[in-house]
Image 1 (cartoon, rainbow, N blue to C red):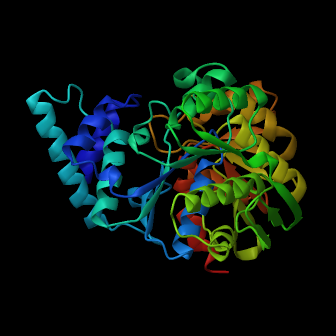
Image 2 (image 1 turned 90 degrees about the vertical axis):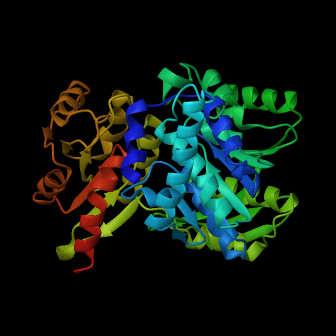
Length: 428
């Protein structure tokens, strides 16, 4: 059954709500059986989704989360409580959703068969209905206005950040991308915004004003912080409460902004009826796990590998800031990217903070081949760059000459090497 689902990947990406709207209607609108918290953004939306979900669970809410893509296994996208759904639960829900899609298509009510993401989104809604969840944190896949997740009737949402990414689908300017991401805004919604460029903020506020939505600007929140060993300790003061001192579970200065967005989103959800207290909010920030995002893996013999799924220039700049402060030894970079990414922008951010570079490629048709990536990096000024097509072999090559290694450029690459590295770490 899951092979049948993965076969839909051949349909690629198709933005639009017609398919998902018809499919969810035929399923009896599973997306209306729980309260949704909808999270969009160029960067940070996954971290915010993870924090908010962890806080809801800590507060005793029967909560779920839907994210994409996954690191290793498809079940990671569908988490209920603290645990991904089982393969059987996923297969059963997938069978029913795909059978429904087949019937609609045969009857002429679904002109185009669902894409992989449309199908997994409908499957998420169905899984959450069957599990009788009270609330689900739904991460936008791409953009917002025409993303499949935008059929949820979310009373609260967040736009974590806005930068240049997926321009071929979302537009070439910050303003155009902001308009797409502001598409999650529903009439009467409360929308939390992170640290946005002023042109993007103007667009988001204009859309919110037009739809009678309330904006909560998280960037105006009072925050006191110190940082030790890559993790920030915060005191956060909002109009409603005071949180901390608390030490964030996730590494990096950029997680401070994500944490504040998460707090304000949880406060907005509480105002809409979800039971969530201060202790649960703090627990969500201090106990959350979000693999592959500045995840440091210590290996036998004293070597370390830092995994980070930065896949666009803004993400690369956040990674570079972390490396500059906490890894002055300038680690070897193992990098793999997708074909459609701004490689020059990513490389420009990382070149000053790494020593050597090994280009590789995750096992996906979207990946840029290792030798082509190496040539692109060399053209950007990365003189000391080698190519190794196998991700595992690339990591071993890096570790053979350096005790400090960073793996980045794509969540698919991080997922390809993470399990093997974690297995080695257990032997320490």
